[in-house]
Length: 166
Image (cartoon, rainbow, N blue to C red; front, top):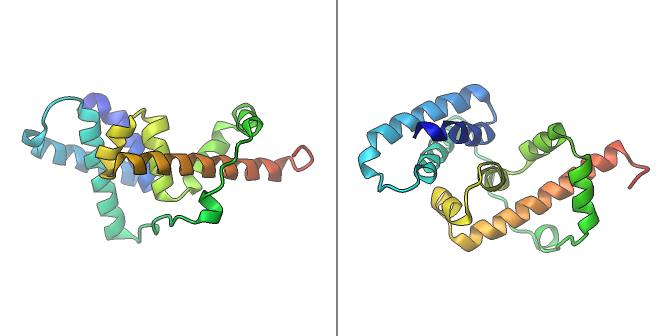
């Protein structure tokens, strides 16, 4: 499980939003994984470990502070598809890592989690479904909504900085 420590810390850091809490969560997760290793069924250990990390993080969040309310599906917000390819291309060219990280940090937890697990950690939809404990179709729809929201928020951030160009 040591090769997956960076992925475990990365997930914990995005969920906990605090370096110290993330390190504590990863340490607790590794202790739990060690104690429960007899339950590991072989195969790729990354999804198994990240499931433990996720559970530890959410347990600590519930214990120490209120968890953000789940993102409710709003047809006006989530139902429209932005099909402007030039928007996505402009984001790729102009968004700095700092803007991306700041905007990602502002997303609701469920959305941030999907992007971190898939786009940053490279987990497949099936692995994410296992880690999060939701159906495969839900993973795909949450990830699509999260990406759309991230794109929209990044565009708003860019518009504030360069209002004449938009």
